[in-house]
Image (spheres, rainbow, N blue to C red):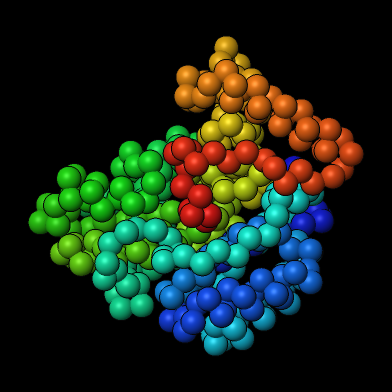
Length: 320
């Protein structure tokens, strides 16, 4: 359960900026973070940084000051929530080709990007009859919650989004497109892509869903459901508190209370989405792993071997 008096601050951030020698910057960040209790994931690429991390507020503030110096920027916006327990198991700094993987050459948000729309103006925009509202996230995220009336591209990962645009959208027939994602980063590239393909009026929610939750009271919200996040909270509600979903630790799919009642659900071992995709031997190993995780939790220890199989549909590079 998360609240404003909780111990751990959870911060999601990204910054598109030209990064000279990403390998060196990665090493600098790793060296700095070793001396802190901060956990989470930070991606570093030539186009910028992207991350979600958690720790004591003072440590995070100091880290962001350090990160701004490393990147040579004056501002680095980040979103804030709080949690009673640490939602990450380890600290990882990864070197990547892209900080959010679209897989299309020449898409550069520093060159062109859609029009930012502040949270306070979002409801009015998406309420217009001449605006198509597109959820740029993946199918499992859409299933957990989305804005009323949003179109689901039915993608398994962000790399599939360009194919959806080519297959289902026409700039001559859709003059006004509004887009949103969790923290804003996917929309940076999605709107740049749309503009390159000839769409004229392309808008995106500044700061993403998390910023909308932070600034718009629930009674004025047009959001239905919860928001999937890429950490052990699984989802957050509109008060930015930990939501009601569980994670299948075999396949990492978010599960509603109803889905945990499935005959195929075994905590830490399988669910209705993956029960037929793993062998009996694999299930036995997962069962033993789950037992060790539970014992470690009871002893208030970290168990760093939480399974994250390579065959998962959830894209591990999509962290906000």
